[in-house]
Length: 113
Length: 117
Image (cartoon, rainbow over all chains, first blue to last red; front, side, top):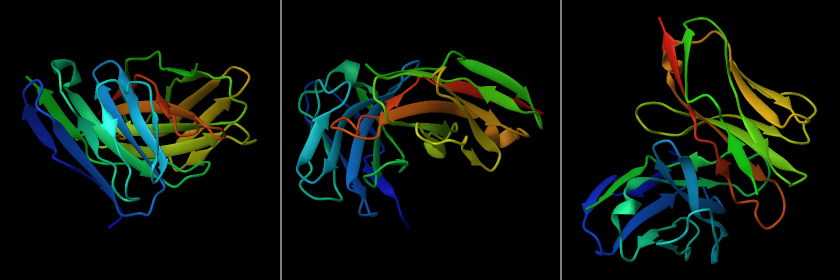
């Protein structure tokens, strides 16, 4: 089944404790992206990657890191999480090219205490 | 800078009636794509419809159609014959189709649609 998977789905952590949210897709998509969703703000892009070893900042990259060593994986790293990073996070992937919609993962709900 | 505006935080529609969800956008890119996504209460993001800025005709997908008015920079979603299962958040999104920032997909804040029986 074609899908984007994220792990964990739910995470409660404390300020400053490094964490990684994994994202994997099995559709051989070149493009992958991370978003955060907050009430009243919609989805905001954190980072995206057009292909392996190519990443770029979205609109809200501060406090986050990403890497794209393999085509299928695009982990999101929070080196020192803070309470303002409490949010719902989505990973997405698509083929490169015009008109291709993004396929979204199920989301990761992160709470930073 | 690119921007998507959805002016309706919430809307109600009677079952079986049509409803229009508004979306206006601002961009300096000559070529761009417009998307609509549905997010039910379960949380997943579901792609509904796509419109390219160069497309001459409005996009349609089943009960969904996109009323694209390029001069007015609007891309309204029309849902015909509303069903109870259409109750959800709806997001309008845009990205440039070429250039270095073509990966930068911008979302609006969403419209919560409630379908009444």
